[in-house]
Length: 182
Image (cartoon, one colour):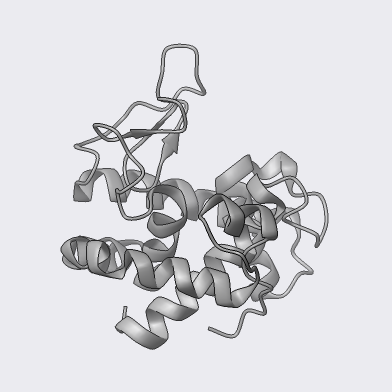
């Protein structure tokens, strides 16, 4: 909750039909997804507890990646290259080696995706031990989107989708924490 954020970029907000950007845009998108998110609350809380990750962060990634399932077709998104609420990528034969685990909206899927997130947070902590915990968290969130090799310095979003991934996710997480008690 102490992580500083600039929120969604103009590109991300325009792609979601908004005429403004920043934290306000991230909050609007999180709020738009809030009713759909409720059906996943117990799974999100369970997975958050298992991996010691704030459930608001999991909800925020679900909001960003799949609009709480609304942007998926039969569980698939990103031109059928990513699977589930948290969009585990490269689950196709030519992809990055992930195998889809569980139904697209299952706790098993959320476990898989959150494990990947935790893995990237740890990689970034090890790669940048001098960064603050907040900077390492944002770097880990950016790495979840584009891989740890894309995080080269404190400008963690320069290679992420919309060049705002971690900032948008953090703003959405703060909204879910403050407004929906995740």
